[in-house]
Image (tube, rainbow, N blue to C red; front, top):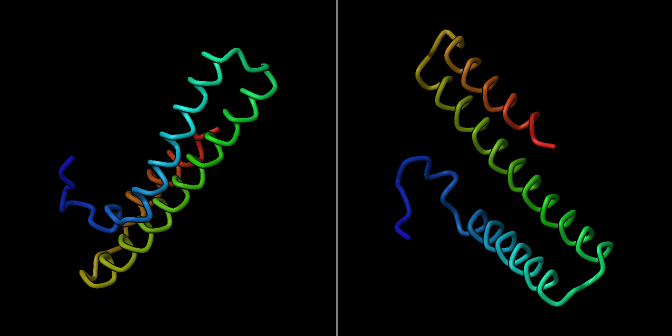
Amino acid sequence: MARSKKNSELNTPDVYARIHKVIGQCQGIERMLDDGKSCETILLQINAAKSALHRMGQLLLERHLAVQITEGAQKADSGEAVIKKVSLAVDYFCRMK
């Protein structure tokens, strides 16, 4: 898949490594279901995948905040637009459970 130049701070090898890890975990869950593994074992793997997604979200949020604050300071924005973008991103992250 071609990587977008937009949001280049998010298109880094470590971000892609994290998403590939989550994909692998989900494929592992599917295999566990097919193999008839115990509910407890499957739930443990689901929790691991969920935690990996959460850590990825945290990384993306941190990078987004850094870019927005830096760009806002360089453009000498009033700060209102930056605060709006940052607040929206924080809100979306906080909704992750």
